[in-house]
Length: 104
Image (cartoon, rainbow, N blue to C red; front, top):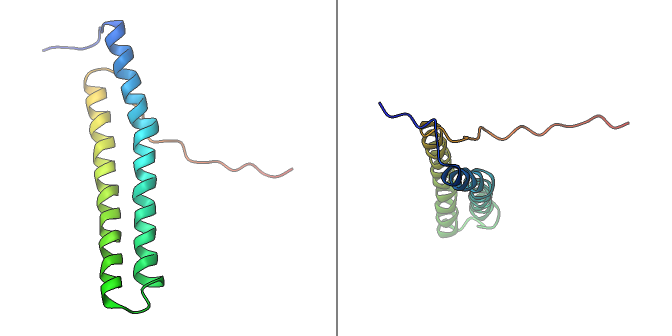
């Protein structure tokens, strides 16, 4: 059985930098784009359609593509973390939830 506990410093640094960029920049950006497409599809289907069946159909397509984007991004995020944990690289978990502080 091959273990990947020891790693050449340069390769690990590059791999960890790539993982950081994917998990901290690319995935949140694509989640934001998918969410905007989803919201725009809802607005186009139900607010801006004016009851026109063709516009409603176009809005439903945008909603579907937004949901597909969410599924793809969750899959990509999981796959990157599985690969990083398999090779012993520093994987990243879910982002921390926002906290609110009481006003003084």
